[in-house]
Image (tube, rainbow, N blue to C red; front, side):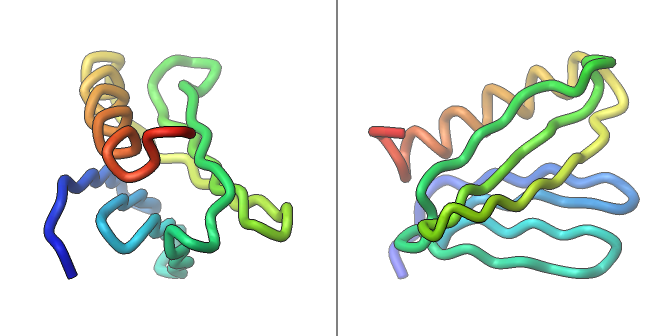
Length: 95
């Protein structure tokens, strides 16, 4: 598999990982892997308090899967947004 940029956001209960194979969401030890060919889109935003990353993967069949990762600070969240935008732009330049 070709090596490309990677993104990882982790807190005590959750994680979001984006790499050449696709997107992985983990919540309380339960993992969901999504390969790029089965992903319609990936959306993300800040939580209402501005300290968590809220990310959703929309599957080709229309189902969506969400994960929230606590950044603990707005500065860390800003770093995550920059890293996530770059990695998603690399693998999914059109959306």
